[in-house]
Structure formats: structure tokens, C-alpha cells
Image 1: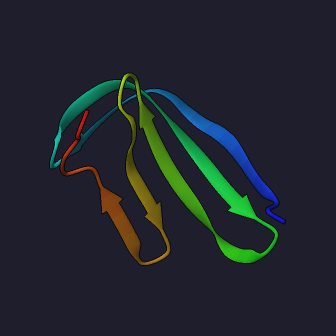
Image 2: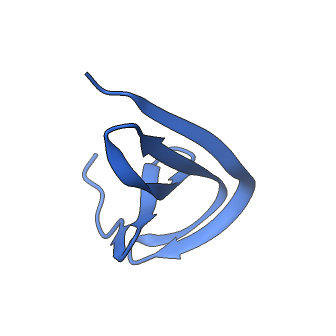
Length: 66
């Protein structure tokens, strides 16, 4: 059973990842009761998650297949 939570931390953000630059994005903090730590995720319009960061980890969007 998953017990995930999230909170919107920032609105209207800009971000650049290997795939490109995006505006109008939101940043969330996500966590759950089963694992320690906090993830930060950046969601951009018409794309979805383009950046995820957690303790000692970073994932960036490098390609998009329609």
C-alpha cells in the first residue's frame, strides 16, 4: 500500500534540462511514509516531469517520444 504525499512549493518556474528550456512549470515536494527523504519534482506544461532531485540523485529529461 502506497502512502505518498506531495505539496506544491513553487509556481511559474523556468527550468533548463538537456531536452530544452521550459517556462510556466511547478515544483513539488514529494514524500511517503515508507521511505525517508524528500524528492523535488518539476512539472512543465504539455510535457510532464522534466526534473527530479533527491538526496544525491538528479534525473533530467533528455528525450521525449510522442
